[in-house]
Image (cartoon, rainbow, N blue to C red; front, side, top):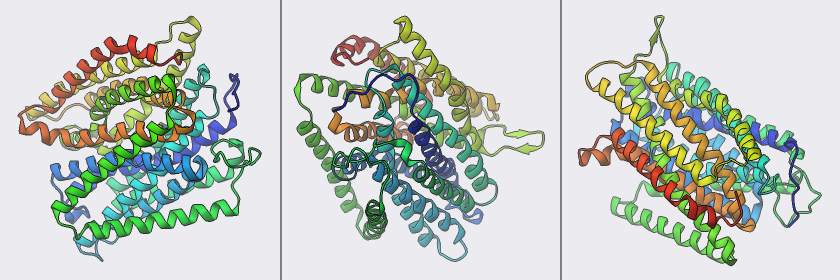
Length: 497
């Protein structure tokens, strides 16, 4: 494997991937901002009229699975297609998923509620599959431009993270605003169009990626996909959409017990398959030691995201039901609060990127486990603030919007300690031939966190535990534990910072 020299500037390909990811996140976050509100909206308002628990459960399943399917997408990329073709497939499939969600709204006068719900589930299923192909592979291509120990690598991932959050801002404002204030279908339609723009942009700027993201069997001088490659992309795209349709259709006829058994068997198969692939592909004491670090940090990652992803669930309902959103006679859409996170990213991500470089020059740059612990402490502080806001709302008062602004900002600072650093860590610690699969494993920790985020409230209610104080204590305890473990984890990283 060719040694990559340390960079003095970022490659042009980083900015191509920045914009591609921006449009994909425009699509995803525009849809995510609407999901729970669309599900809980009354039938007379073109929604589905689900109660809070049902909507949060569906949110949990969806947001969990969109981070689980990257295991499949990463494996297919490593084994057969390479990252670049897999990203194209994911983008096209996700665009179709958004258009299906739009149809579930636009056809409210033509279809009965059951048929609309089937169309909605079909759209969510297609989005889940498409995201699995897109998400791990574009991050892997970013990492392939840099040497593992190059301090520019973390800085590059912070810039890439700016694209994620710029897309989230635009998607929440445009798609979220259209969906909540005009018609749900227009919001999902805008999200689908955004994804198509992302695919077209990547195709136009593809040569800036050089040969990065192509399968190892491809000529190293090749920089752009040809007609044969595009035939493969279209065959995969159509097959995945039709396969999802068949799966959703068959699933509807199965009894509940059969669904439960199939779900458990499916999860077991994923765990066994992933373990087998990693076991076969990991060699030597150093690789195994680094893999252990990834697994340990993945567990702490679950804790953080189980809290953070309240943003699209309970926070969204809190903004809708318990927050004073009227300003100068105009009521701000509840979806727009989710943009506080993205604005804070735009403000602080560059500062964090510069901070890591400055600290590195001084020899003070914290190791990855310490950065993760700091992120958990910030998360704990955010949920302590949210607990105070919830107490005010429980007394029957609408709370100031500044409570949510503060919570989102604190969580964003915690996110910057974990998410871009985590993506960079995977490309450093994972064995080179398994990097996409291990990126899929990392995304699976997000899956578990997202699923827990949607299910925690109903679980804790059974034991009479309040949601926000519970998350506060778990995050605080996890941060302390990780600090205690950090010397052992640093040693196990075997020279990787």
